[in-house]
Structures are given as structure tokens and as C-alpha cells.
Amino acid sequence: MSATGGVAGGGAGTGYASIFVQEDVSTAEVDRLEAVHAPLADSVRDLVAATIQTCVDEDEVREVRAEVDALVARLRARRIDGPAGVRYNAEGRSWSWGNAVVGERNAVAPPLDVVRDPDDLVHAETVLGVQYEGPPGMVHGGVGALLLDHVMGVAASARKRVTFTGTLTMRYVRATPLGPVRIEARVDREEGRKVFVVATLADPDGVTVEAHGVFIVPSWAVTDA
Ligand SMILES: CCCCC/C=C\C/C=C\C/C=C\C/C=C\CCCC(=O)SCCNC(=O)CCNC(=O)[C@H](O)C(C)(C)COP(=O)(O)OP(=O)(O)OC[C@H]1O[C@@H](n2cnc3c(N)ncnc32)[C@H](O)[C@@H]1OP(=O)(O)O
Image (cartoon, rainbow, N blue to C red):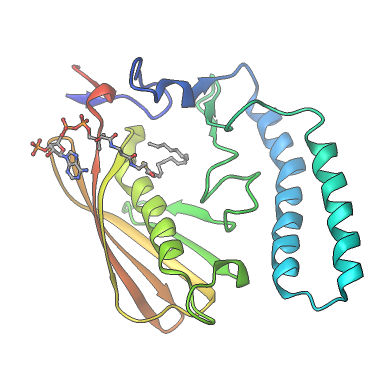
């Protein structure tokens, strides 16, 4: 048994096929587009934080809102219909501009660079700002789970197989303060199509969340080789 790559999977009839779309565009062009759009997402992140923290007077808030609405209309002048999906080109470059964790165009996603070490430890670091608050001054538990899920998914999806999150278990050891965090994940073991992943979320003082996950290679992504 082998699993198809995340970009080459079938899935006809599953509802998933449409998210893996091949595009005839060079890697250089994808990189160039990202260099244009990622800074916009950065600025919108700043806008979200400023919206939370601002203490300007009410008239100023109303004026800023009108300006933001005008900007939204400009961006929507030409747009895709629906989600950005996961796309790939003939060179094997894939991109998922709307992804909730790593989407280069997604201001909701904290900027997260996911790195795979030669020993298959997958890790990522980011700084969680006021947009990610749950308990006062602390990271929302669901945000921690979001980041862990993604980094664990990358660990499980080694060698380009596609896996979906089946079951995630989180143990919140202590509250995570807003600020710098590090996520680490690695495959613990595999049983058939099930990939068991262990992971941690940590602040500079150590682990705050421990996670266990079962990631599944979907039946539709399996080919007999
Ligand atoms: C894949 C998304 C791609 C996104 C790409 C994004 C960005 C690109 C960047 C990097 C890409 C790299 C990695 C991806 C990164 C992040 C991953 C994020 C992951 C997600 O955010 S993903 C969304 C949430 N996720 C779902 O939306 C799943 C909905 N669901 C299903 O799609 C099916 O339900 C499925 C496929 C789970 C199973 O379906 P199936 O038909 O293939 O499996 P089947 O029933 O045959 O079971 C076979 C064996 O798995 C056991 N089993 C079954 N289900 C289980 C479960 N839930 N928990 C534990 N064990 C389970 C059975 O007990 C049996 O075990 P046994 O063999 O021992 O009997």
C-alpha cells in the first residue's frame, strides 16, 4: 500500500478533490505573487490588533471603518469565487493561500514557518498577539489546538502522503501567556493507515500543552503499488 501525495490524490466523489487543483504557473511566479500578497496580510494583522487595542475617539473609529470598507470593496473588485483551496504546479510547488494556520494571504493565520528537521522533528515558532486571547493575557485553548493540529498534520504527512486529522487529544498543562510559542511534533508510530503523532506547545518557560493525535490516510488517497 502506498499513499498518493497531497497534491495528487484522487478523491472523486469525496468532496475533497476540488481542493487539490493543478495550475500552470511557475514556482518563480508563485513566489513573486506571495511576495506581493503576504505583506498585505501582515498589514491586515496589524489592523486586527489595532482594532482591538485602539482608544481613539468614536468619530475616528467611524471614519476608519468607512476607509476599511472602501478598501474591502477595492480588493473585491476582482476575486476568486469561494475558498482558495490547495494548489500545486508541475514543479511540485504547492500553496494554500487561505489556510487558517499557514495561508500566506490569510491575516487570521499567525505567521508560522513550519520546519522539518532531518530527523523528522517538525517544529514552528510564532508570536501570538492580542488577536489570540482566551483567558485574560493567555492564549485561547482552541488557538493552541489549531496550531498543534497543523504542525502535527505536517509531521504525519511526511513523504507527501496526505493525512486528515482523525482524533486529537490535548492536555493543557498550564496556561500559555500571549507572546512567543514553539510547537514541536513527531510521528510516534504507525498502524496501517493510522499515523500516531505526539506534540507539544511551549512558551519560553517550557511546555504548556501536550498533544496526541491520530492522523488517517483517507481510503480515497490510497493506491496499490
Ligand atoms: C489534508 C488537508 C490538506 C491541507 C493542506 C494545507 C496546507 C498545506 C501545507 C502543508 C501540508 C502538509 C500537511 C497538512 C497539514 C495540516 C493538516 C491539517 C489537518 C486537518 O485539519 S484535516 C481536517 C479535519 N479532519 C477531517 O475533516 C477528517 C474528517 N474525516 C474523514 O475524512 C474520515 O473519517 C477519515 C479520513 C478520518 C477516515 O476515513 P476512512 O474512510 O479513510 O477511514 P476508515 O473508516 O476506513 O478507518 C481506517 C482506520 O482509521 C480508524 N479511524 C477512522 N476514523 C478515525 C478517527 N476519527 N479517529 C481515530 N481513528 C479513526 C479506523 O478505526 C480504522 O482503523 P483500523 O484500520 O485499525 O480498523
